[in-house]
Length: 216
Image 1: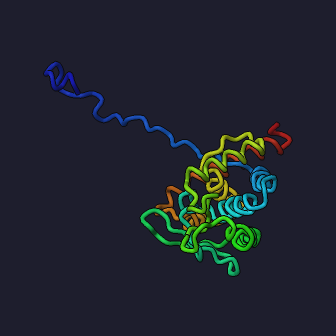
Image 2: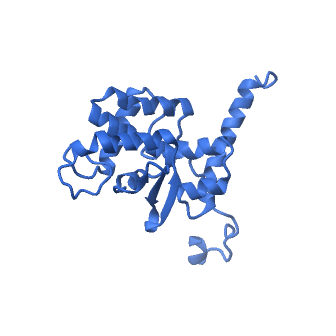
Image 3: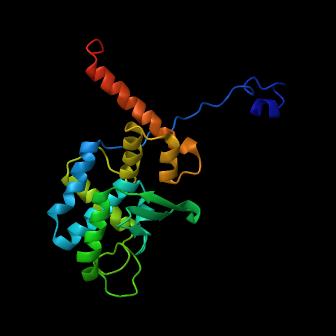
């Protein structure tokens, strides 16, 4: 196009050629057994820290919520009896996500046996607090996750969204409908959720090549 602008040629021979598209990197996930190993790590900590961290990890894996959504939770956002959590996603869009019984019980245990000893003010609304009694930050939670990933000796490089990605992949591998997973994750567009189908397809391919006698 510069040669056309300079008058050296009349037509741009590349004008109908599309620019190469860069493929979207697949998110890193951990297996179910690795997720269970990660969820066991808080048991090695002192009681208050163990109960808080166990509740956070279980809730992340149970709901697939973003780390930023987890640290934004307030008291009352988790229904431990009904088994659900109220999340506020991008654009402050509200969604209700079911959680499995172990996650609900972990949160209940934290609320009854740990949080009352950690908060400094009765006015604190945050569900998860640090040892100064204030709302836990995203960075604080990230440091906790990294520590547990290291102690679990996970081979996968952990990111703040690893449990979210793993939740989606495990749900789809278990037969969940793509649109249901979209709603659970709070994705505005299903195209965002579809990236996880590539992960399950890769898993199917690896399992096939590992298991079929003629594929070995």
